[in-house]
Length: 293
Ligand code: NAP
Ligand code: GLV
Image 1: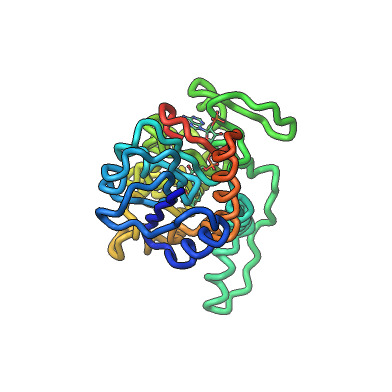
Image 2 (image 1 turned 120 degrees about the vertical axis):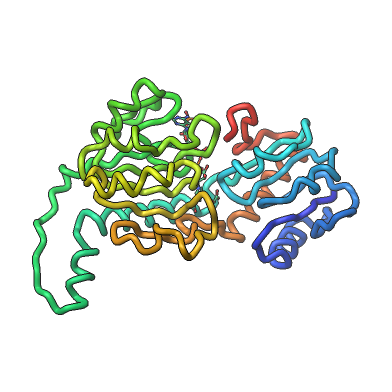
């Protein structure tokens, strides 16, 4: 079996070495234009040429959870597209989101500012019940209060479908976006939807930059409808140095790090799935290309 590796921004020799060690019967090589056809591919943000030159791929393993970049390309019709299932990302995402919620709710930004000038100033003690948190997207990474189809989780109030969206939004003081980026969710964080949150709400976008209509955010902050935002993802990445989000006092920017791919866990998962596919067994994480995630 030939496995072609093509990942932008990744440590190719580490990945190829570990995949090769775990799959001694296969030949794992770094893709270059004109390389021989492979049976399977391990990719992150490959160029269109990668797929144009390899129309016979059986499976494409995406080295991440989100497949929106892949879905924009022309892929071999018969190839399974497989995303990472957690592989150590869910706990990172939970840590990031908890940190952002607690930092906002406990006024840590104000205390950090006061510390700069030696100002001893207590803020109002936070009342947890005044901070209902809503998560858009109950997938592998999200703990959901709203998703495409209903779920039977007793500890959460679950909302599903577009008709339920206004009811969901009206209850949220903190909104976390963990949706996949698809034609249905592009621009879903906008003036109208964010305007339906409780006044003074806080936005945390850890999904994709395309979910947020960036031009709508600053007026929502200026009007007080939003108290602030923590943003990990952007329409243009890296976020250009002159972008107003960098210096806005109510916006916290991080460079797309809320849940990073862990090579060890990811390689183990991909190797297990290659083994299962080779034996004709079912695997999880197959992307529904029609749905786009
Ligand atoms: P997932 O398992 O595919 O879950 C997606 C969830 O979104 C599902 O619950 C799905 O509902 C729901 N959904 C999809 N379309 C919807 C719609 N139109 N309306 C309402 N709900 C909808 O994905 P995941 O592994 O949790 O990852 C989510 C996203 O996080 C990824 O796509 C990626 O963009 C992003 N991500 C970001 C980072 C980072 O570092 N910033 C890292 C990893 C992932 P159903 O259950 O009904 O299908
Ligand atoms: C990262 O953004 C991912 O989709 O895994």
